[in-house]
Every structure is written in C-alpha cells, then in structure tokens.
Image 1 (cartoon, one colour):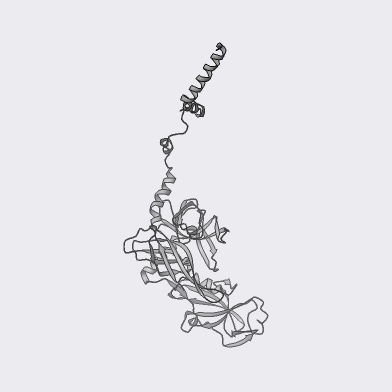
Image 2 (cartoon, one colour):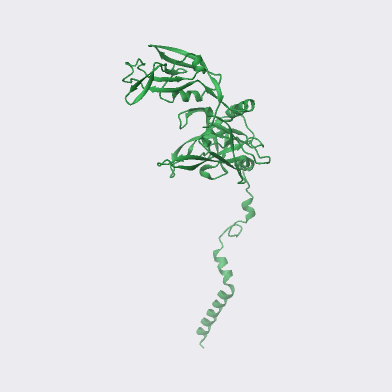
Length: 391
C-alpha cells in the first residue's frame, strides 16, 4: 500500500473510532449553551428561591380560611312551558357562613322564586337550606343549614371605614366554578343603582375585582379577611351564553346593611317589610285622553283602587274607588285618590309605589302628594310593618 493511501485509511478509521466511542461527549459539547455556570437550565432550588411576595402571601392566607366558609347555593324554580307543563330550572349563586351553627348570608335575588334550596360546602357536602328572613330593600337574605357539627364562619368587618383604593378580595362561584378568588380595589363608594326589577339599591361599594354570574351573594373581603360587603351585581359585556361577563365594574352591598338585618332578626325572629295598605292601583299616564272627563289630573299618577281596612293608609284617610267605569275593554275604578308623587318624587310608572315601599321600614314616614276632588294635597303616613316573605 502506498504511504498516502495508508495515511488516509488511518485517518478514516480514527475518525470512526472517535465518533462511535465519544459521540455523546461530542454532542454534549455542541449543544451546551455558553453560560456562566455551564448548565443547560437552572436547578429547581434556584426557582424556589424567589418565594411569594407579601401581597401574594396575604391572598393565599385569606383564601385558605375564607373559602372554607363560602358556599355554593343552588335554587330550584318551577316554571311552565308553552303547554303549561311544569318543569324545574336551576339557578346558582354564592353565600357565606356567618356563625358555626350554619346561618348563611346571600342575596335575595339568588333565592327568589325557589321551591327548593341546596347549599354545597367547600368539602362538596350538600345540605337543604331554609329561609330565615329576607330584606328586599337591600337585596339580602338569611338562610340556615343543619350540618350536625360546627362550621367555619367569616368575621363581619366595618364597611363604614372603607377607603377608595384599598385592596379587596372576592370569593364565589362564577359560572359554577366553585371557590374562585379574584382581587382588586375599592373603585368608589356610595353608588346608587337600580336592579333588574327597578328597585333602587343605595350606597353600594364599587370594585374592579372580577365579579361574574354566580358570584352574587358571596363575600367581599378586606386584606384582613373580614367581610365588608356582599357581592350583588355587575355591569358587564354579553357572554356566549347570553349572561353578562365582568368588565371590572362590580357592586357589593355594604356589610353594615347585613348587620342591621341580623339585629332585627335576632330581636324579632323575622325581617319586617313596610306596610301602607294600598292594595291596588292603576297608572294613569301624563296627558291621558280620558283624564278630563273622568275628573283625573292631566299630569297622571297612580289611581287608588282599594285601601285595606285598618291599614296605615286607611288611618291617614286615603280613599279608594267608589264606582267603576268601562274604558275600552277594561274596567276602571274611579272616585278614589290619585297619587301624584311619593316623598316628593313624581310617579313615573305602575311600579313607582312598590319601588318606594322597598326603601322603607315599618315605623318610617311616607309623604304622598295626592289629587282629590279637583285639588292637590299632601298626606303624611306612618307605615306599619309585617314579616317579609320570599314569595
């Protein structure tokens, strides 16, 4: 063999030997990135070294205890289809336990119209619930479950000292996802809004903590884990299911209103509603074409049809209809008082009196501006009270 051929053969054999015996070493050298440590990635010890920030740890600590006392509420409502056949539908909301005996605070609208209420705890155990009392004025309700043992509960804070900008946490069951935590700040205080039924909700806490359908009735907590509000309603965009989704504008009823409700329940065994005693009215619109011939005011109002005997309205001298006439295809009672304004606010629809009564408690005064016998007068009435009922 020629010397040149021998040298080439030796080189080929040597290269093959290096590749087959030290191939792993060669690949490792090629893929290793140029780092100060020479390692491909950092050790787990390095990743854990950062830990949690103080605010993160605060969120974690509050959630660990608060979610144990936050419950999921399922309400069964019986409805009728086009053929008048009955069928049950389920609604979902949240609530929170306020003592170890199983009393729960939630929103009234979470349980409204229900024929059965079921409460699911954080451990997924389920219990039937009874309604102890409701407060339509503030959209609140008290429920009770019997678990047979002491339950975790949440402390009630002080909503009178809330400051815009302070941190808040919301826990609930948005879209049925139980035990969800969201955080944010108090965006504003003292907000006044109308709910879907047209009733005014006053003095609400506004927050940007994400609140979605299913959060209603759940707790709004401060950074110490105290309940300062009951998550009640949102302004939101439409989701694929047709429900409103969070856009960072949520509202909570201050916990101070819950305390008033609880004090009344502890003292009397029920939550009272204000009683006037005007049992039926008909709304007459402004400029109604038959107003003049029926001796009704041109500005319209609520034409009183019936006043309950022995009621505060009767005691104040309010008058119901004295005779009936046919207007179009409807029978209308006339001769009674027409309520033009309630506490100085002009009547603007059929539910004006209902909305006003929701804002009142028994024993409070109500001033009605009425039209009678061609003239306007004001009547002050001290409202009575009666236990408020869910349905």
